[in-house]
Image (cartoon, rainbow, N blue to C red; front, side):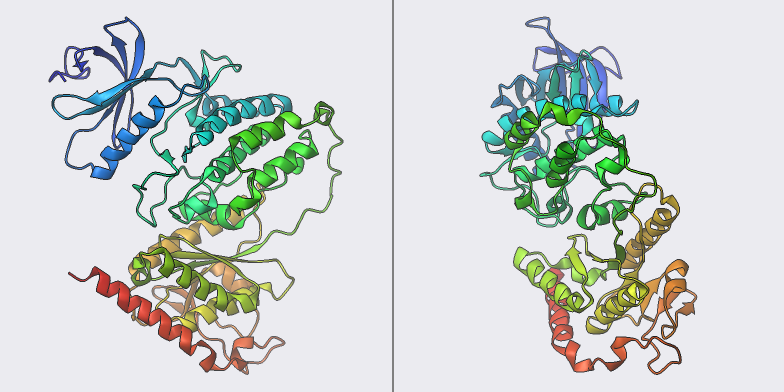
Length: 488
């Protein structure tokens, strides 16, 4: 590479052939330029990996993997690979066709699509994705910004950015617990940091895209990362028929299956999605009657947000994670709570809405976890609505989710804790018998006052302490093992 760059002086020439003309984009790992192929006169996109010691060998191998994967594709719906290599000074580069046009993200910022238009568009993407999947590759970062309308024409779409893609039979470059993907489009299995991500993860992302095309809003939103991940793992998005009555029922049902939490319940790959979209009867695209005003909506779940103390985030093997997840689920089962464990060290649980005692059940579940596993820092937030109009409730839940993460990294194992951390809104919903404690560091829920006057008597008052002893010992052993693994 020449020493000069387009920003500093005369245009650089890469590999003696590609003359950089314009910086098109920049990120943490490198830059993308518009360039001219001096051998053909063709305008190309040239991606350069930053050449410094801050990049790990994984970053370099992932870049090389992207180039190798792209070179194996020849589908008209996938950006074309032209060249790749390493310059004499060690800089890795990737050359692709230059695409003039607008991304799907830019298009959706203006307006949602009609059902027929959205179906046609997503079917094209699914066909391109099907070719990727047939070659044993998973994209892992499908989102509207990675779909381009070439020359602005909706009839010609290109799938781009294979930076996170990998072959199913290749050794993974991702450490267990590393979350890859884009927030709001990553699948539940990606959000949990699982290593083995299959085509169903791309199907989930495509379901998020189709949902957004039809409704004009994302399926999973939130002001904080923690809130979005919570919704991906535990929430169902609002029914499309209620957000947009023009969406046909068969199409809405397909989107619902694409967004299933369990990979096995989704269409298996892009080809199957394309086939199902093609099979939808055209008659179903006629506008149905709108949902009558005041029609009942399904009850939304109440959420319990938990944060684990950082000493328990050092569990590194998949077996240890499965054991830890199973223990938490055992503890939460009596309260009918569903638990998912993130590899960031957070556990999320949801309790179905169940009348006036739901706040008490959530509090009891949090207290049971705190009592059984004193190594945990537990944060309780109650959120009743995932519906788009409930901005006030969602904002309060977002704030507590952020607080949960602050507590996660602040608290230490073995440090005395007043109890379960909660916010004012949650405290006001607790029945008599629970007495929130105000402290300089925040509001906490200590063990309930057994025998306190009032109609509600917490069930934990009658639960024998011995019930939690084996689980407490197991968690302590896990924590000791984690400390030993980090010791020099």
